[in-house]
Amino acid sequence: MREFGIFDVLTMLWAVQWTAALVVIALIFGAPLGLLLAQMRTSSNKVLNLIALCILQIVQGVPLLAMLMFFYFGMPMFLGVQMPALVSVGVVFSIFAAAFLGEIWRGGIQAVHTAQSEAAACLGLTKWQGFRYVVAPQAFKIALPATVGFLVQLIKNTSLASVVGFVELARAGQLASAATFQPLMSYACVAAIYFAICFPLTHWSRSLENKLNGAR
Amino acid sequence: MQLNFNQLWRYQDEFLHGIQMTLTLTLIATVFGLAIGLAGASLSRSRFAPVRIAIATYVELIRNTPALIQIFLIFFVLPYAGLRFPPFYAAAVALSIYMGAYAVEIFRSGLASIPKSQIEAGQCLGLSKFQVFRHVILPPALRNIYPSLTSQIILVLLGSSLASQVSAEELFHTAAFVESRTFRSFEVYAVVCAIYFVMVLSLRLLFSGFERIAFRWPTRR
Image (tube, rainbow over the protein chains, first blue to last red):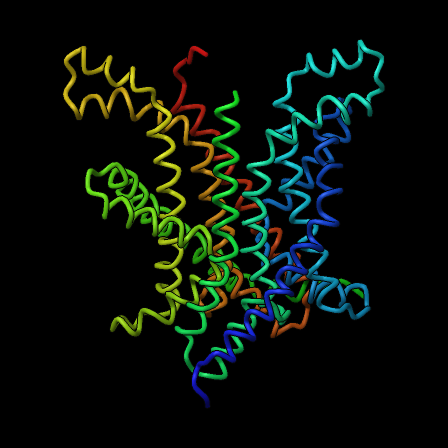
């Protein structure tokens, strides 16, 4: 047994890169999927709408932890292949990000008045052009505060990857706690690092929201 | 691989017990969380700056750190304070504190959503302070925050699965137990996901049903 020291703190800071990696993976795969879901939810096609709604309801109605276990332990057994932790964890967080971003962006798209897309159509823009140049820029502004807010949720939730043994910040804390028998120090330190990352983002999200409300 | 759900039937009682404990945990966290939220939201309008700062610090600390770490911290902090709780109660405390921070924010936004002019109008009609709160502020504020409050309760239900990580007995703990007995990871976690989904769905239906009954009065917008 050894004392909790600067070494443990440095290990935790080193592990932040894996937390960051998970967030980046979730955004790279989750954001396009989220955009697709948002498009499906705002489309006039009832079938597409229903499919997207079902996906959203399922992802938002199941604990992230259960989803992680399902994809980490269940899926490889079912498919008969061994997946590296990064793949199964990455898949889960991508789906998670897609569902929540999809809902946030749907709200943003719907907040833009329909007259705007009608005006775009009258100007002879195609549907895609209308979305790309008229609706999307306005929806982006409206949805930005909530998107940043979700980023905070995502960062916090990557801590669940520790449960399947993926070494990121929370797992580094558990390891330090096990090695030093000082759980209080270890977890307080982990919490402080998460706070240092999340608090500025929360603050930014809030100031964006105030700006948005002021602009209206 | 062959799917085999039959083995799980033997663990019916364990699953039912797990469901019951998960719902209990959610209920405890909701009740205490709402109490903390209500107290915190009214205190955050206090004239004394230290009180306001304390509330804001609590809210920001909880909202900007992972719930999993909070549960670990509470689980290890309580014994230092001389409180030796079983894991289930430690998890209940942690989840209440977690819910409380979000509830403070929600209640505060609800109070802030009532225009000052309405409160002044109430006062002009000669209503007492309590009457203004009860009849002018509370009903529309509750209606405004109802959606975010109910989705927060659902998040607590989902988050209660984290309690399994300090080996508190609830549904997810049951899942891990049954999995270790049967080695049927796919089936076990599929079933557990389905159970959570059904719980969340029924809760959502219940909430929206209640909303239709409780907030029937028309609004002018």
